[in-house]
Image 1 (cartoon, rainbow, N blue to C red):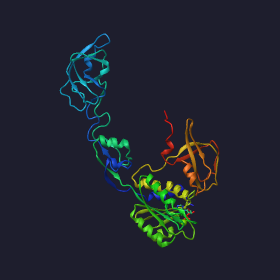
Image 2 (cartoon, helix red, strand yellow):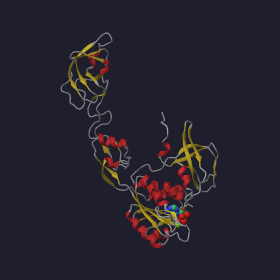
Image 3 (cartoon, helix red, strand yellow):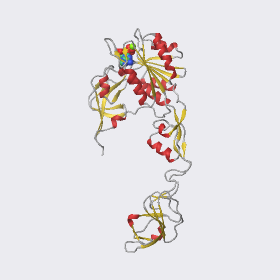
Image 4 (tube, protein in one colour):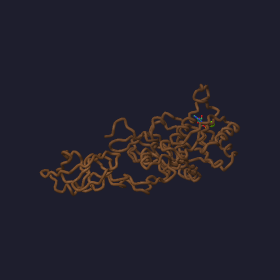
Length: 412
Ligand code: AMP
Ligand code: MG
């Protein structure tokens, strides 16, 4: 049996990022940037006021104090969005609003709350330091700076930056289109009555949802029957996608034809028994340049196998540089006992408590028990050589997604 780590490595060696396309920045949310973004001008573009107040020369306020008022002549009003009319000379001030460019000659701004308005003048009773309340041109970034690097995920912060530098369109990596094929004579679709011997094709939906959650595009192709012909027809239709996923038919049963058919379709295929639980059988190959994954049929096994093998592959195809789920350290609230020899992914409930993270393994770890997956928010990772952990030991936990970090109450 091959280890999970080695299988991941072999798979990722075959995966390349997809090409890029030009998108308007709102459509690029969640995509991966395919180019470095450089700024054409400084930000802020000019020195500007951080306050509503008066732009002045600090030197003119040297003598100001609680008992020594200084009066400056107010030469004009300067709202945000307008250019200064003239420079500020000795003994002069400009009534300035937040964000307006600081006029020539002025080197500081006093906030309006610290002043008294006179007749065409402003009275100041405190000393102002040079540079006070001025946002310097280029203090955020300078013309020519690379402000976002190729490979970054485009989040709202990156959208803000792209808008700031005046980039309405960007090159982003294409989203992988992923064909999802379910196999099995026992399967019916969700709106058909599952008569005796039949079950609903839940994997088709689960795997499509996992694909979508990675930011890729699922192409659910429905059910292939357990014949070579039916499988071949579905898998050939799947070749229009960038990546192919099937579930079921990959173990050693009499009707498990996925391996044969993928092999017939070209390329060398690798068939593994991966040392993991759940999720042992796995087929992987590259057909016509496209990665093909034959995942196990058991609903939980296929989800775990997707998480460990397909997800990093899709994130790599999407152009991302960070492709692995983080594992967090958490305190185990009850013991875990397993047979050593395989990496176990134990479905568990991770909790954020004041004293830190705790994790509780759930009852019902069978590879067909979907209800445990619904109650769980994470996997405790039990390494291959381990027979488990005692209560209160610190263990590695992979959260399923960010919902683990959302709480019912506000955290401050
Ligand atoms: P297989 O690997 O094809 O022998 O499937 C293993 C188990 O997973 C069997 O109990 C199947 O009924 C079940 N299974 C296979 N495909 C699906 C599917 N698409 N949805 C739900 N269960 C499935
Ligand atoms: Mg089957």
